[in-house]
Image 1 (cartoon, rainbow, N blue to C red):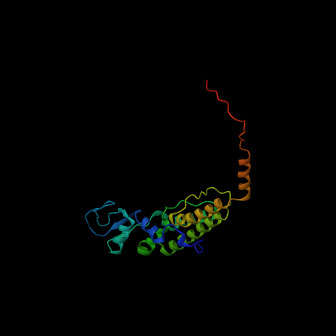
Image 2 (image 1 turned 180 degrees about the horizontal axis):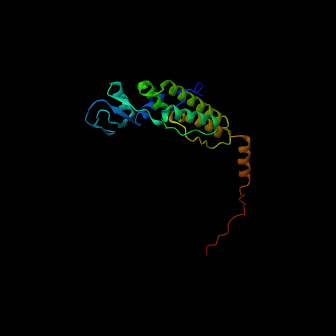
Image 3 (image 1 turned 135 degrees about the horizontal axis):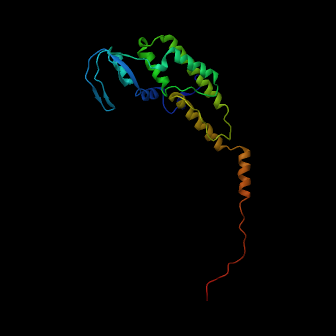
Length: 211
């Protein structure tokens, strides 16, 4: 699916989904002393060297680019955790393992801008790519089961990027099914209409008002 999906059909572009993900919180270890930052989205800091603190991902990346901090890799991005997730994904063809809603965007930003802070970075990159491919294949397989009688589709634990790719396709498919009903559904509707009670003409009504 990753190679076949038309990204022009997505509700948001990959850059827009990544922009939303940048508000996720992450832990950094500053190497500078700086007063607290009072921003519209909240107050962060003060920053003290070697004292961990939590900031939005966009701020962590900005400080990292300027050499003012290191970024602590989230627990779910360890080789051990990712290996467990990949094995579980492969063993459960109809279930998706719980991951952060923006795991794709978070991992991409960290691998691009903080790869030196990630232990076993090449293995982490490979595992995340394998997990994405397995999950996209499972989404694609699930979509193949859709029929004209499908009224809703439930896919639990999808990520933001996966939802963004699937939602417009699902909306168009279901809309097409509803627009071109199957013959069985049309026949059922006609049968229901024929069973409606018929109005019997009993002639002119009598005037019951006193004369």
